[in-house]
Length: 440
Image (cartoon, rainbow, N blue to C red; front, side, top):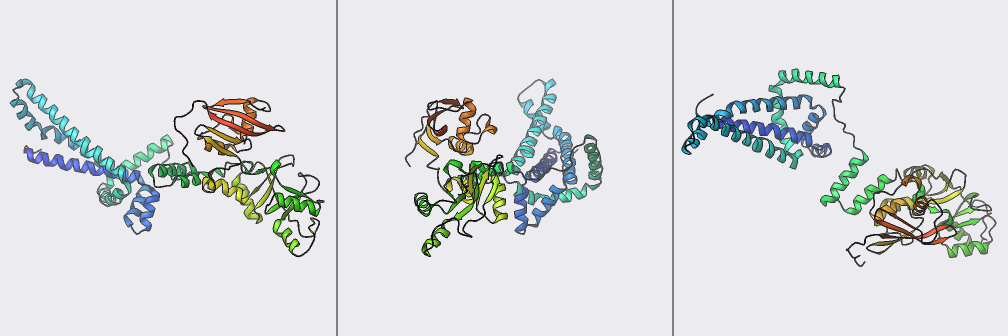
């Protein structure tokens, strides 16, 4: 090595720059998001395609990086000891230290200074830069790095084969899994909402879409006791009175009782008969249409698929005993997806009284209860689907008025029971918050 300190300092600067380049390249290429790189490639940036190719076959690329980084580190250690030793020696002599310690102290000071420069300028700074904008950095450094790869090709081939052998011996995967799961998408949506680039309502819609695979049809249905149905032998006066009292677009038609479903009738077909001066009789040919029947244990996404296949938007839900448990429409499914974009809360099911208490219908699906109370889960959640079911499981009996359950900082109190059916539950914080509920 040249004894000229200027040459030594220039060599140290060159080694730091080379090490910084390798560190920046390594982190930027590894951290680059493939979705973003594909977007850049689709907009005509051919360098993004080269980065994607490197990520598909990273072995040679990262082998060359490691060879370069280790070579620079070794050279830095050799050059660094003598780079600042003369200056450190003069400084220590000026401080009039013992001559026996000056040489050793100068070497230590030189080593510490060179190491600090490498850590700061060749490691921390370039890696932070690579994390801030990995895709933009990667497309700029991939070209020069490929030239380095070409120069190190023989060494790369040798080390890569040895590395492949180690991976095979240990049974490790040679490529990273690029599959994007629903959890990945939800995490990205959460990150986007936290960063302010995605509206909270948009994030909620995305979460609701993925919930379609896990939520059963019973969580969005109109329950059995709320179904407005007609019987085959109903008189015209009774049908008119029922339609006037409960105006709907379709009505379930049954034979004798609700568990013997015949089909359904469109209110527009009944209105057409009135306009044409024909009597309203459910026995009229062609008036009753075949209804779609689905089991209660299928998911909302599965019922959507059945709607599409049958070209229907209305279905009756049966349990394993062939008893009607409810009905569901495509609008019920879409309301589950849109959530608060359709209505902030179902006024008949969830009403917020103040900042610390809610009035909730016993038939409210558990996912809606969790969302209203900002809870992650309830105990033994697989054993029930509604708030009434939660109360029954927790109490281990049919609840009575004023029965209470405490869990997760909330108190659940039964306010009203009608024929063993839980109508209303008051849910209140056991420790009231200090934040008042804003008007509106």
